[in-house]
Image (cartoon, rainbow, N blue to C red; front, side):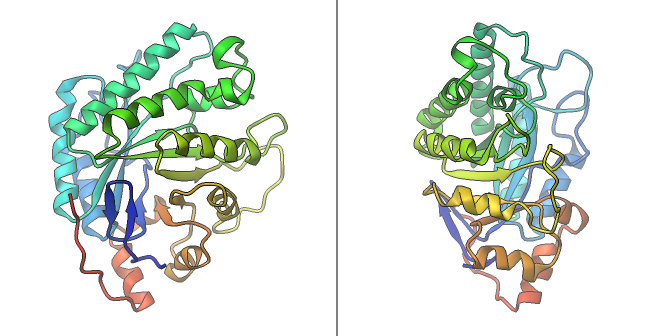
Amino acid sequence: MHLFSPLSIGPLRLPNRIVCSALASGHSTYEGGAAPALVNYYAARALGGAGSVVIEACWPLQPAVRAAHLGLYDDDFIPGLRVAIERIHHAGAYAIVLIDQPLDIAQMADAELEQISRAWIAAAQRASQAGADGIMLSCADGGPFHQLLSPLSNRRAGVFGGTLEHRTRLLLGTAERIHARFGGHMLLGLRLLADEFTPGGVSMQDARVVARRLTGAGVNLVEVFALAGGASPMALFPGWRTPLSSAIRAVVDVPVMVGDLNDDPVFANSVLVERSADLLALGEVLRADPIWPQRARATLGLQPHQERLHR
């Protein structure tokens, strides 16, 4: 296994292990459409050699205040997203859409949270209509599923608060419904908060349980994510998240992805060789250098894999 080994995930066969992560492109607009600059940004990363491109968070609900975003809360957004996905496909990569949105759910009633789940599913439908090869859900970036998962933010009682089972109920139900509707032809991924490094917060043991439950519900790719800055002091060496991905990989039978690597191809490849992860999510690296995969292949002395995108 190396950076340019193919990999089958659900209905997809990825040409390599390099994924352009969902790091914001900086080209979203206040109107929410896929502007030409955003389309060109993702197309360039696909042309540069990434086998898969995760398009930044698409919002399922119209924002209450004016904010730059990429929208999926109306059918009018489908044609623009389709153009972006077609450009990614033409460059030989798969296109995966992250569905998430910064919302304050602390005061929402349970019925309002159910509406959030329905909005996420409707956004997945629109992404499918636009030609997406996969959907990513997130419980790691401050959105509703993250707020529900973390005991630091979830002070609710009732069906969505308290125990880990209750705190993940909405996420689990949403994943099950998306898988039931689209699982035959789309990848379903989860961006997983692996540890909050704070007493009373999400722990690695919690994350392992969540990973098992969600893969049982149809998730076939887990991206392991964590932020530094919790209560516990940390040494932020390159690849500091790889021990977390190894711990998650040990309890699931689907591919695991990890990011936060430096731009050294030898080091990046070693993460795969040592089986700490199955895919690498590269954000800042590909933002700075869209053709990094080509440079990496030359550095490692690996020949291009001849298998192209199959859809």
